[in-house]
Image (tube, rainbow, N blue to C red; front, side, top):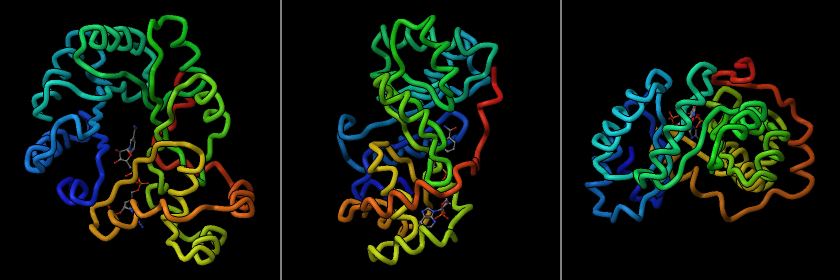
Length: 240
Ligand SMILES: NC(=O)c1ccc[n+]([C@@H]2O[C@H](COP(=O)([O-])OP(=O)(O)OC[C@H]3O[C@@H](n4cnc5c(N)ncnc54)[C@H](OP(=O)(O)O)[C@@H]3O)[C@@H](O)[C@H]2O)c1
């Protein structure tokens, strides 16, 4: 599917040690003939690799899998309480050694970001979190935007677990767009980076075809009134 995506113009790919998709992504890049600098590759350190030795070793392994000598963005996958400080300091070391272009975090709440401030020398450039029309996280968006941290919205389609909302359907009909396109467009209009996933070629095309329409203020107001508590992935708010 990476091959198809590259052909359609996707250039930003989100991988992770935990997804076991780094090798496939690396292979697709090699097959594409694109220069390395034409792609933006992210990977994430899995929580079981947060200790210093494992972090460095697993990162080297990730580079091998991706068949590259650097990643554009390296993230800590989840804010586990025990090792996340040490893991962050080791990410900073990789940044200083120029082994990664940028570093960031994933699933961090405002509380985790505030505690990170106390021991970090570098700001995370990205916080990758679950975010979609049914889990809007406006406080986190405001916090990250005012601290110059880019939010990457994962599960932007709510993992396809809420594809029958009447309001979203009506907005889609009004704009002659699909339900998924309305969900993705809302994120784009909030200045968020989106990470939709699909294994269906026609949906790859659909999910990138969202730059020729705009949600208007009525649409945005209706979306703002939707319930915003639908978490479809893990919940980091319980982590101290
Ligand atoms: N950092 C983290 O902890 C974390 C956690 C979760 C995810 N992520 C990242 O975010 C990415 C996406 O997240 P996700 O897979 O959980 O959720 P998602 O992108 O919100 O949803 C994927 C689901 O939506 C379906 N879908 C895709 N396009 C569609 C369309 N146009 N119309 C209808 N259904 C559509 C897919 O089906 P088909 O594939 O069958 O087409 C799949 O079942 C992941 O690949 C990963 O890179 C990160």
